[in-house]
Image (cartoon, rainbow, N blue to C red; front, side, top):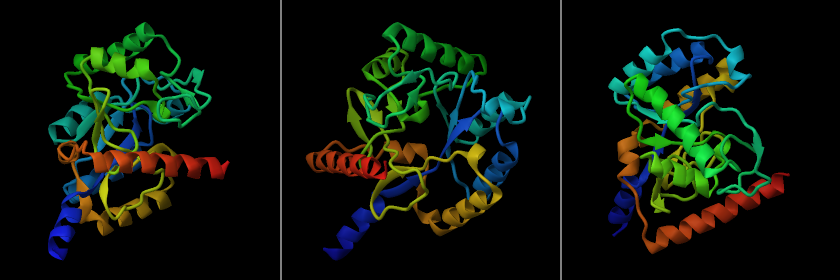
Length: 255
């Protein structure tokens, strides 16, 4: 029995490497180091690509004129190219009324359904122009409202890398792969996604990330492996609710 439990935990424990804010203008030195790291250890990460970046902070970074060629290369290597917003410009304050109660600024929250559909389809057109097929999405700053998910589904996207829980789950006809923590932490059970902002990192941060990768190499999975673990049974629904309450309480106590 003990062996069966151990095997179950092992089979349902995994780390999906997700990088945010991938754009023409970014920290290309650390991106190239990441690419070499992933190739060395045969890791297939998720890259959150901003299709029409207008973020003033990101625009201060060096621009790669061959960006979309690089994205196609990553896609051909089996990396998951995910749509990370549309222009990455925050123009609304959620006042903690967003879908996941993260709070803070948002690109999507508070906009009309028509505006959100327009944002998403504008981004998708850029990917289509670059011959890159998109199936997944995650919003800047984790902020959504009900209209965001309606807009995504109307645009043919029903997979989101965000949410609470220890296993991928379905809610409102959307498949969610949870993203729980800001730091790279290996949980003892569950399927989790990292949240990596290379543009905010120093070389020391990257070196620590490399150590994290090496230490947890046997737990690292690809996007397809993560989405295949989707589980909506009653026990996991309770765990999702418990996880959400713990994280929201933790954020409240920090403020």
